[in-house]
Image (cartoon, rainbow, N blue to C red):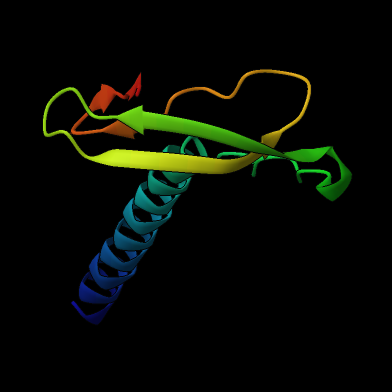
Length: 87
């Protein structure tokens, strides 16, 4: 009788450990899919002074951009979940 309860206890422990390992593996796999590489560093030499003004079409907030990465026009910032328009 002692052998039966010991075997049952060992099976329960093994089953619980295997379920825990499986749950850990699934959650680690899900979290690994959220990994995002950081943005590349901006070269300080490539930043140039600009004088751009943007206005939010929803609430009217205004933003003045004084520096941007050289070589291309910067994208308009977002406010109120909408792209701002040049003012």
